[in-house]
Amino acid sequence: MYSDRAKLRDEIEGPGSFTFFAPSNEAWAALPTEILDALVSNVNIELLNALHYHMVNRRLTSEELRHGSSFASMYQDFHVHIHHYSNGIVTVNCARLIKPDQHATNGIVHVVDRVITAISNNVHTLIDVDDDLETLRTAIAAAGLTNILESEGQYTIFAPTNEAFEKIPPQTLNRILGDPVALKDLLNYHILKNMQCAESIVSGTPMETLQGTVLEVGCDGDQMTLNGKAIITKKDQLGTNGVIHYINELLIPDSAKTLLELAEGSTVATATKLFVDAGLSSHLTGSEALTMLAPLNDGFKGSLTMTPDMRRLMTNHILKEQLSSKSLYDGQELETLGGLKLRVFVYRNNLCIENACIAAHDKLGRYATMFTVDKVLTPPMGTVMDVLKADDRFSLLVGVIQTAGMTEQLNKQGGLMTFFAPTNDAFNAMPKPEFSRLMRNPQELSAVLRYHLGEGMLVSGGVSGSHTRLKPLQGDKLELGVRNQTVYVNRIPVADADLMATNGVVHAMNSIIKPLPVRVDREQADGPAAPLRSAAASRVDSRSFRDDDLFQKVLKSRSSRTMNLSR
Image (cartoon, rainbow, N blue to C red; front, side, top):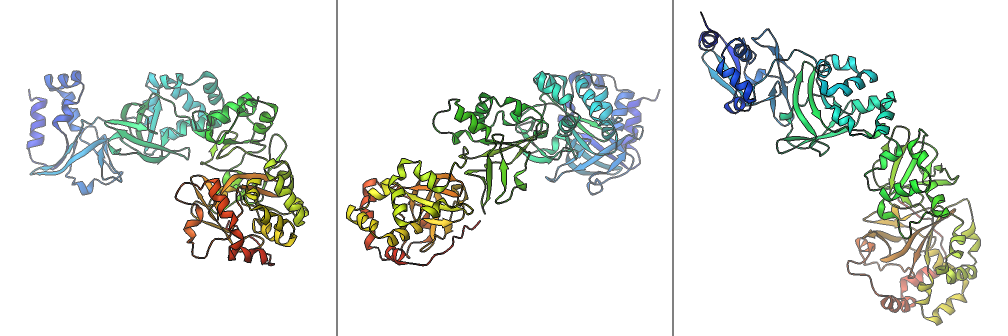
């Protein structure tokens, strides 16, 4: 009887023109032992069929193996599928092409790194017949995704096993399974728009999902990773319209999460606990359209005990509508659950709500959005004058303002101002005779204060890390910068920033601000590279301020100028 072995030998050695995708020795050795033993010990129709699937009845050079092409094999015309990737890798049914274009008299050989198998089913059918994917199969049907997975395409599906679904808290899982919108988002987050075989991944790469966001697909040694986690348990289950990789952990996109779920495991754990302790859990887990302003953990200072004031503060960190930071505009007012109106300030380098500036990308949830902000909000509680009167550090300044006749200006509503307010320490550092003389001259006193005051609103987050210039109401521009999270004004550190008022913002200064000498480079304005000077050194400097010609020019100036915030 003419054997299958002889038939195959005659085909390979005889006349003709073939393409053979030949598995390397390592590829055969990598087969499960029971499969390899069966093939070697019983060279029959199964082996012939397997090898025929590696053969195409025509000569194909590597140049003809174009991306997305497929060729009928010599096994029942089942096709082999070619994919090219941007990193130069070429695969044949997810087997990597490792040695192309080995020419022979009767064809051409391309060496691949694994034994390839015939593809006859689409990815939905593969999911449908696997008991390990029973929960996924039910979810796909409920979300109405069956047609997509049966249609033509080249998808990559990261298929959560039954075990992956079981790891999710029942309350969360039931909520998502019962919400068609959230469920569809969750499943689409597991599907890439393009086919990615395991062999194509050599480094972490962001890849777009059908849900619209990205997954980072990478590798750790010989393991594929998703978002940095080695959760892929089975790779390269190939279908006619894509490939399936099994995963043992469910991936939940932000768009399927509640506010509380958005905040879990992030850098806002302190805020999350305080929201819960304040009795706001129903807002964080419900279906209200809200925006949560979640301060970073290091934004909290002092006691975190839940008091009525703390409860009120946390309530005012939740806005009454779902927003995107991209939709915010300068001067916009946002209402909180506590009934306060918060203002939006847009700067060249930052976007701030009152004193708190956006510190990370939005997290857009199922119904609500989370803004991560760099500070705890300090909502305005009165005018600039009210802020000064309520703070004992400014008791001398309040008297100075009254003497200069500027009380009404600092109480005035309808405009915004930025006040670099000298504290008692700043005035006490002046020689007493000089302070007394200044208090007897309201015009000169007004000039000093106006050099510390500008029109417009500049919170600390609006000062760029390199350089910001700001015009006071009188005198030359102030030079602002940031170093080690401290704002400097003409090389003087701000002692306490962002005391918010209804008509402006107050920044406490422990030194009187003087003009910079002309010779000082702009880059020096953001503070000294050396440690801050001692209080005694500051007092010595302040004694000589009368002799500073430039400062005297400020005192004598009568021109009033508007401030350029460089927003």
